[in-house]
Length: 308
Ligand SMILES: Cc1cc2nc3c(=O)[nH]c(=O)nc-3n(C[C@H](O)[C@H](O)[C@H](O)COP(=O)(O)OP(=O)(O)OC[C@H]3O[C@@H](n4cnc5c(N)ncnc54)[C@H](O)[C@@H]3O)c2cc1C
Image: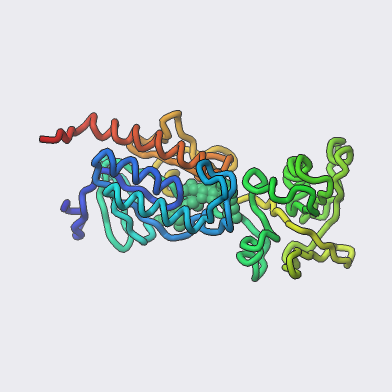
């Protein structure tokens, strides 16, 4: 135990903030490097919403996000990492170390931020139900394959939605942009009409499930029905702890790291969705392996723990 102000806090090697695929995979690596590692998780992993993922390497018949998270938690615990279902409220530097406070306080020599992103969705009551049913989908890289030859819409500001809509044309000819900014086309972009993508202005918060379909009210008062609607409304990254500590972000708000997942702040690392626009489980695992190994080496530079 170390003293911090009037509070006593535990001294650990590495604090991980976030218990999604990135944080949990890193916890497994660091536990197996025999590091004292504590992972705090607020329980909002994007992966928990995945009905079934079919592109996660190693699961040819797919796996649900809940099942994957449960296996990753079990693996991290078996490796010696400690998992706490608590939200971290603040992290600050104290000399070369970091002090994190929440319901409990820890002092760590290194920190890995695996805080993910939060998707911006239409403000509708049944959003989670629609995601589970596949009538609303968030990630064409993940599950565009599943809507092959189906009626698909992409909802969002016309420019962003059109980009995603063009990507969807590798799966289906029936793609509509549901513009939330009133636009009915994109000036100077012949590819969209050439690709046969339709445009309509919509009322985003009117999106509802209708049996196994999604229905939306258009600005002209008619309704339109789709097999799946993909919002293209952006997301909020969980970069705040990083930027407060002095790390930098790119324009969309992702934390900037080097090839070892290091931020500009010595001892502060980031992995998974909070770092990279290709928000994928496989990417999160790769980041985690790289970050955990570099964290272990970074810790070894200041103190060795040889086995007797
Ligand atoms: C509907 C849907 C379907 C998807 N399908 C696929 C797919 O098929 N294939 C694929 O590869 N990817 C898929 N993804 C993307 C995948 O879920 C993400 O890429 C992956 O979860 C990213 O992992 P992560 O660990 O970086 O972040 P997350 O899994 O989002 O985890 C971040 C964690 O950090 C926690 N956290 C944040 N702030 C704090 C704090 N202050 N204190 C403590 N904890 C905190 C959050 O509560 C959360 O648990 C899908 C996503 C969605 C939403």
